[in-house]
Image (cartoon, rainbow, N blue to C red; front, side, top):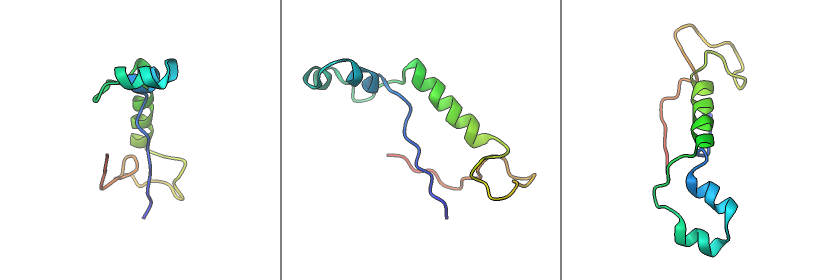
Length: 77
């Protein structure tokens, strides 16, 4: 079994935390923040990589009937 840990892309909360002090951040943060433009680009790059025909972590060439990593389960928190 291989386990892949993928961190979420940049959200507006991530960006905000880099710009202001902790007290201000805690008062302004959103419980469900949208992604920033950078976050959207990051998410697309990860999606494109995971869906590609080949990948660097592979020990052998992928078969013709399998596209991408062939994940059977995906969990998020």
